[in-house]
Length: 220
Image (cartoon, rainbow, N blue to C red; front, top):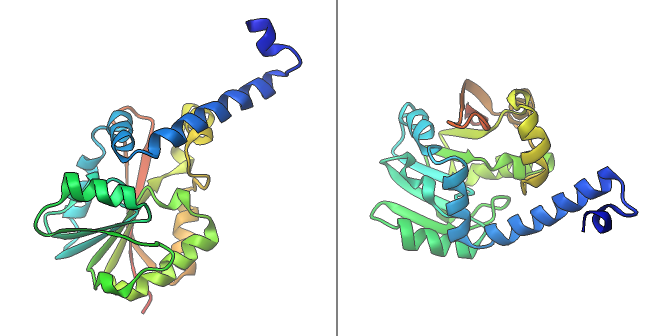
């Protein structure tokens, strides 16, 4: 078996084959909202705790969560909550498992937001930016004008703080292909006219995921 596996292949080719197989498996896993929610709770079961702490320090009466996925982060706020995701399956799952008074889940395109979402004092993009190329981030930031946000909280991996395990194992397998340094995220915000008020960093309990949160105010 081992001989057949390596015959005619270099070590690099074998590694790429394994990565492709794993990525295919992950794609199938995350296609199911329930399986995706389970994988998130397994990889970082306490990710809601620091996020809720950061959000609690930002005065707001309504929160718009862009790229809400299966909706498990809705508990980051006690205020009125609206979650938006491009997957109808994710939104159906979120409504079924996290629906409650004051919570709203809608299917929507992050690159073409609908004004019917209303105005929101705080918009959160948690682990979304690494799924978007630079031009897509710019379109999303420009489109936020329709929801008239008071502030934007961007939370993502701080690439400069990642270790070799993350870079060699997690980065090739993640669906997102655009992990950025904190300065690169800040530059995208600045170029779009957003002013960064403050930055907050924390690391997941398993030390694999170094997050950074950038709170920004919109262009005048």
